[in-house]
Length: 200
Image (cartoon, rainbow, N blue to C red; front, side):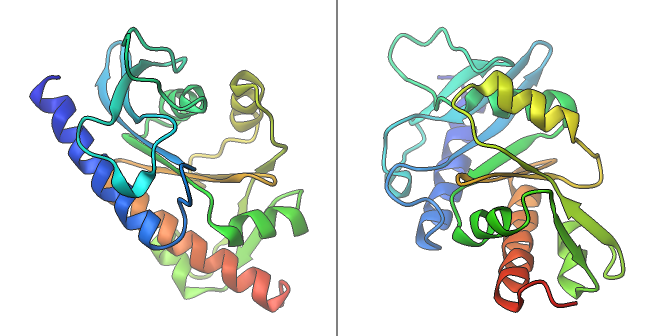
């Protein structure tokens, strides 16, 4: 493991511990990634099947843009291919996927997309408070190619998030810190939307 990959592993483990403490990565659910090379696109992704609150710097695996790896030991998340697609299309340096409840409930109530407006917390999501932001919702699938196509069909550069119905939320940014800030603010926004029933 190179120094760069180990540093990525340390950062990913720390972020996973943070999200686990927030109740957003229960059991072994969720996965995070960072781009370690652009040519060819290579990501460090958290390994599959481990408690995300107990990851170490070694619990990452390198994958290509399709989410496949040459590592004979470490197994990436089955969703690594969607991470690769998001990073390739958006140019993001980090992608986070968690199973916070508010995004899933919001996707259930507004399957055509969740509209957010007139909320100060939109600034933390990278938008103005008076913007109208519609977070896309796509049906769940076990086929990452299908999910990737659905993501790309609805992709907008100014909405760095995707809700997967009855599954979870993906948020991305230039780095893990930017992605984290966007995710934390989006979760608040979606919780407000759910708890108020969408009242403006």
